[in-house]
Length: 111
Length: 120
Image (tube, rainbow over all chains, first blue to last red; front, top):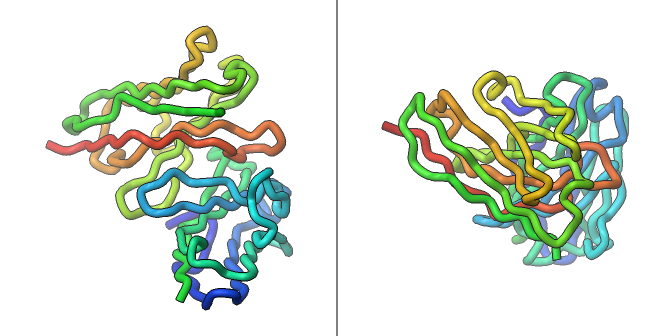
């Protein structure tokens, strides 16, 4: 069982917006603003999309945004495009010895 | 251009050992903290180990503590993962990942991964 809880799958039509949640505890998501989101296409390495809850690295589309409330972080993708279809993982720094915890991943399907 | 290239994966019997390498280029390797992250076939990401830029601070996931050893050679721009007492559950693609300078335990560049298969 993954330390952070994500929905297994979400879907949306092109142009729509979707939100993926990531629920942890006060020892990770709720306790620190060190939540990251990664996009992974099949057979490829993960790509950083969001860091420190809501910051986008250079080159990442502004259609991707992040937020956090309490122990739950969220990734929102607006104006869905076919190329957004991928697996998405959240991660957080944690005060436990494990240092980093990942969510189980969410498969995004663009209908 | 930042590049991370892993090597050393392969098929190994349970109880065996393997050493992974990650060759870094395109950035000042000695200034960055590095990590190993793995992904079992069809499964999610699992953080494995961290090493500070100087190599003086190291952390491991509980699942590999006592069996895996992370190290680096800043003169050779290389990161390593020595894996001993391998188990079937260690079967995964192993990625080396650079820790972003701007955020804690956030990985801004990843290698393409190297597959480790533990099976008899």
